Amino acid sequence: MDTERYSRQLRLKEFSEKDQEQLLESKIAIIGVGATGTVVAELLTRAGIGNITIADRDYIEKSNLQRQTLFDEKDIGKAKADVAKEKLKKINSEIKIESITQDINATNIQNIIDGKDLIIDCTDNIETRFLINDCSMKHKIPWIYTAAIGSTGATMNFVPKDRPCFRCVFKDIPKGPTETCETSGILNSASTAIASFAAAQAIKILTNKKHSTTLTYIDLWNQKLDRIHVKKRTGCPSCKGQYEFLERKKETKIITLCGKGAYQIVPAKEKKLDLVKMYPRFSNIGTASVFGPVLHFKHDPIDISIFNDGRAIIKNVKSEDEAKSIYSRYVGN
Image (cartoon, rainbow, N blue to C red):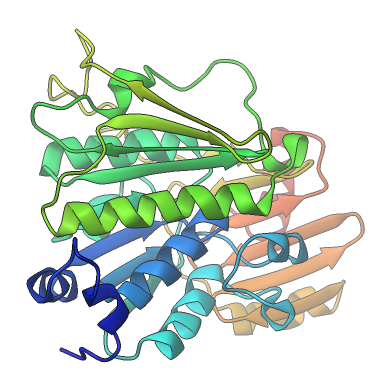
């Protein structure tokens, strides 16, 4: 163990060399590498978590730079997970970091969390959180929920067995609209603060120390902090072993993204696209570029990012139907 690297951490009265060794032996999965995910990943990389898997479906946009701390202007257009891995390896070359650029869904999440000691949710998608919860309950893996919007943030630890799960707190996907960073904005210190809360709790969980059992809300702008005590909910499907989100059949999905007129198309069957071979076809009719696993194409007003697994993020469209039509025209079914 590199005691010099972790010397300031080891001087904490709450921490020991045994705890550091335990962190170095730990395996975690961070789902989402955006505002909270970049901060959580960096803090835990510096803390010495020995094996970190980071997964994100998206690529870097200029608007991300206001709050997603691992990225800079030269990274725009590249896959978030791949860039994050590259940056994190420069911070701590002694640990193992795996990047996954995929949409997280019922067909792949169990492979991603297999063998992990902890899952950290850094997504902006409520359905993915229910999916993580089902995996956590089924495989008895603890996870940490994080969320940030506006000047507020929330986090809670979910440890299977006798504790309440995510569906005890949030019964199901909301039927109405939910806030997004596009509609409500986000204060970068809010996402950074809630990520710091989560990183500290991760260290506690991985070293078997007493950790929070409450749902914690913070409001940075108004300097407020609230803790809510949650009980197990009678009839909760996940607590009864009914994993509705995990057991859903794979189907083509259209997901509304955090952005005006932006949708993600996820094909029913994963594709294997050769983006380099596809590039000339797109460059002949518009502006195209390839960055690793993603091909960007613009032909006003169409703006598409096509991933090598067949997913596509389509912007500047008016409806799901229009997004499907554009996908069919440019990628195929």
